[in-house]
Length: 161
Image (cartoon, rainbow, N blue to C red; front, side, top):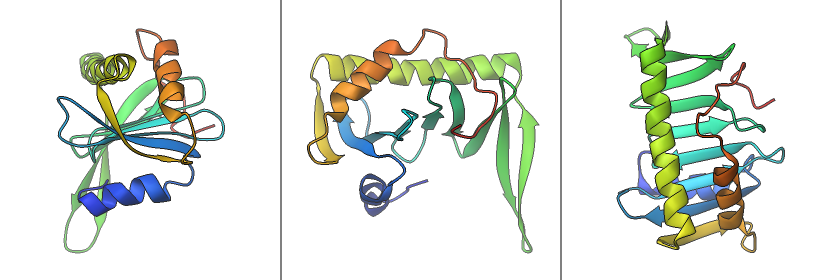
């Protein structure tokens, strides 16, 4: 994930799979937030380089990147993948999340999305950039967040479709 200012600029400019996207600054977050949508309506939220949440077209969580762990959906549950490096290779070590771990991750996700929704709804944000330049991305983000159910569902597969 992006770790330098120039990487964040690249995300807004080069994340071409996200056909509409915006970079926002809100209170209580040191890093800008990038939110984007694929052609099918799938949304991605980048709260700086970490955390990142990616959803499918029906609003189910399909992937997340939190505290240097990659989470992916499998049959309605989450598993975590941790990179372990040695001199010869990088291995992904997998572990299934417990119900408590899943609940904690979803609670943190919901808190961030709620805070973002409130900031956008009351106008306490700065739009740092958007692609395309004339897109009404903030309105689309507001609509997407308003339609998200109180309890976020986990997708059956980590893929967009």
